[in-house]
Length: 342
Length: 285
Image 1 (cartoon, rainbow over the protein chains, first blue to last red):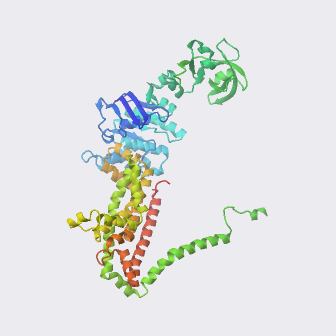
Image 2: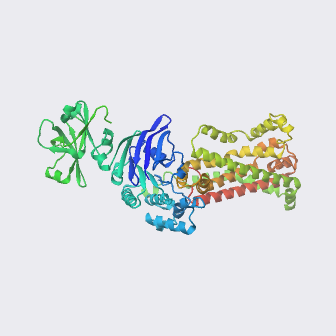
Image 3: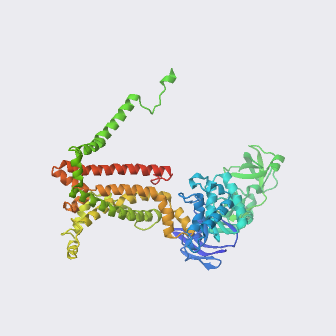
């Protein structure tokens, strides 16, 4: 089921949580709403789910206006950051809940409920936990049960609010891949909220980058990383070095008063001055992190560190040590007006 | 040796420990244990026969009946109100919320005698609504309805006060989850909200009931002390005591004391059950 959001606005007191949002979610895709906390992404998700009402604007499911329908009638599965499992019910009863509260004529019989719940528990690979209580489960298990519970009512849309936010790094990574596989199996239109760019880029078909209640960019993970539309996206996704033309960015001279954005892996280091645009720097710190080597340098007379990432091979071909004086030059950069830069 | 002299600095010597425990226990015995024993000793001072007669005497029986009736009305009334108010306060944002919380606390803040007096001023013969009530032949003050009203007022906060912090700590995510799974408001309440607060609710009901049965001040003002008609158990104790009928006074008092002991027993049981089931009785403090 596709979702269409048109001119959506939401204000809390004097604070504008959503400022004229327009967004199309295609049927069957997995979309990430990515942004720092307070950017409005959760509010947008809750409005789609019917837990919050927009001040004005349109919300359509498959072209049909759903604003008058409350959460119960939208057929949307919602997965909460803190799971929100029913603490007094077993895992089985949690998953069965959506089936048990159906109106009498739609409600499946006990045998059918049993079959469906066990099927869903097998889908999330936790059937063996069916008689436990939520308090007896780990965070990752709870989140998978929450997902099984949401899927029990066969929603046309699945909404996930920071689904992995409360989990530790290792479990997060695992669940991420698992969610992606599950989505490829089920093809439910899914929207998930995250503040973790790695999560969004790894899992989603498309990423919506939000900041301060507005959408900064919508695109595939590759697009938002390789071709950021705004300075905010540049900074928020991936690491970036900022070079202010008035301080130290000799290669931006023809652009006027601007800031150049350069990815750490787009910087060349050489021991000799190539031309006028090379920037002389001193190596401050060399750290090898797995397959890459991170070098931090500082321009003469500047306390700001510039981050450079080299592959292990390139570093080994021309090793550096703290205190070395070298020249750097970006292979690629983008300039933004000084005023518009975040 | 240095090791022998080592002492945990937060632990007092044995003598002081015993002294402190002794003082605490002595205090408890003097102010709580001794009076409780006295009640039963006095009640039974003239033997079991007289004790029994004091309890089955018509005025005493009527006082017990009235007390049970009042509690049977006041507790369910405050149960419904308490759940509704704490649900609204804990799960929703609305204007006047803090005012509502203040109003719930009001009966705790004013003296019970004043609470009773308010009803006399409102509904009494000389009160604001007195003439209207008289014209319609409705009698509230110096009658059972007045006693019920005063008791409801005094026991107003017990259940709500117990539930508000508990429900606030639980948040509303589970209710939102239930609704997103297709549950109606009623289904959400019966299947999710109520089971989550059951122990806290029971705890509040027990306290509310104990107070409803034991209330003296407010009830005394509105009752009119008509024997066999408008005296509750605490009032019966006072009346018989003032008539130097000590056995009768202490016999009914011993019933109230028993009620207190039973209440404490159930309260501990509820606390133990709640702990065992892993559901906190009170909100996070």
